[in-house]
Structures are given as structure tokens and as C-alpha cells.
Length: 114
Length: 113
Image (cartoon, rainbow over all chains, first blue to last red):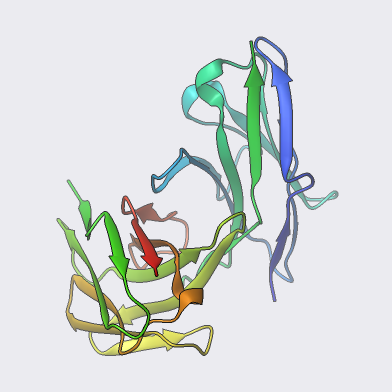
């Protein structure tokens, strides 16, 4: 079975500060990992994904995430927060067969203070 | 290019009334299709998924059902809505390849009154 844990349901940062959203996963086999962003009353949008290859993955809007197998983590970072980054962020894990649905974390709501 | 359509965007329904939410995907064939629900302040709950016409897997036993009458059409239904059915319903699709993430629809905000 797979599971995803996102530490902290809310995170508040100042504009220009580092954004760090934490995600740890549990999987019996090497997973595929995803980060999604959701703006109010909208569907989720894919930020980035890790499948194979380079463990540091760059996504849209200046976000990046690093897959650390030894720590079973896939934390999302952005060097400098912008007001437009305020949204809810979801980490998700998938098995490699494609037969199972993605398993999502419970989400972290990011607030950006001016 | 592929697109996903979900409607209606908002819906207010009385308790005990039926429900039908529709989702269609264009520009692809044989997609995997999913229905999720977000209740207020909660994460994403997988309701149903389908890997082909007439093939529906239910993740949570509840007051809802799903059908896939055509390859790119996924319908979420209820015969009698409950107050607890209120929430934000999201349809999603992905190719039958595991290294692709989902593409989500824009969601339906359902309020049962």
C-alpha cells in the first residue's frame, strides 16, 4: 500500500522568503511522485513530477522538488515566494503499473504575506 | 491537444433529489478516468476510477455511483442526495501509462440543502 504525508496543513511565509513544503511517502516499490497546486474553486494543476533520472526536478512557476530515496521524501521548494503562489499544494504518489489511482496527501495551504 | 470538460460548475440541490455530473475528455482514446471529492477543509477522496468502458472501481461505499457509457465519458450519479454529499467534485484523466500525472477538470461545487 502507498501513503503520503504532508507535514503542516498551513504554511505562512513573507513575500520573497523561501517556500518549503514537506512530503514524505511510503511505498513498497519505487514510486512516481507528483506535486499539484490548487487555486480556490479550481481543479488541480500539475507543478512537477519525478519518474526516473535526475532526482532534482524543476517545474512551473519557479518550483522544484528533490527526490530523496533514503529519506522517502519529495519536498517542494521555491527560493522566493510571490503573492501569486498563495494556494493549496498536494503531493501525490503513483505505483509504476498504472493500474492504481494516485494517492494524495492531505494538502498544505500556503499563505504569502506582503 | 487533450482537454477535459466537467459540468456544471456549481449546483445546489435539495436533500433527496437525484444527481448527475458529467465529465468528458477530448483528444485521446482509452483514458483512465477518475472522480474525486473534496469536502471543506479536507483532502482529496477518491470515489471511483475506470480503465475502460463499463469498468468501474469503487473506492468508498456510499450514496454515489459512476458509469462510463462511452470511452471518453464519465458520469457520477446519485438517486437521493444526502447533506453529506456536499463538496467539490473533481474529474481527472490520464493515459494508461503510470508515469503521467492526472489532468483535472475545473470541478463542480455541489451544495445539498
